[in-house]
Length: 141
Image (cartoon, rainbow, N blue to C red):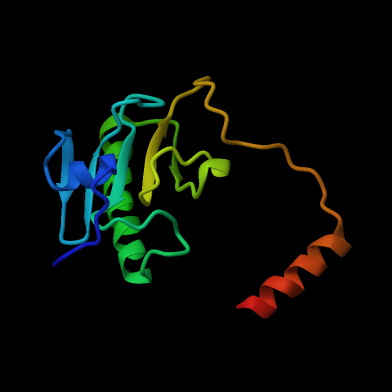
């Protein structure tokens, strides 16, 4: 199977073996490997083999394969490392914290008091604004 690639992309280089990694698993559409800048021990990445930067451009079947790979890695993390929780994080664009523009899902084991800031406080939203955005999105779907 051929995948679109970007010669300057670090994940594309990992996929083809130009850059070594701690590879956890690989299938036709995905690869999973350890993050070398881990938020906590056991932090891994599930990566599409093809170069699609974000969720809005990746084919749905490839995205589902990446999610399946992330789930397999998360199950191993839970079983072997016994974290207090696991975050699956998929960021799109620099504004969302995406540092490598190649679709991937972080599998992040959480530790008590690890200081990782992914959570937010709940505050009631403006119902009129929620409804207006709902109508726009519903029409777009």
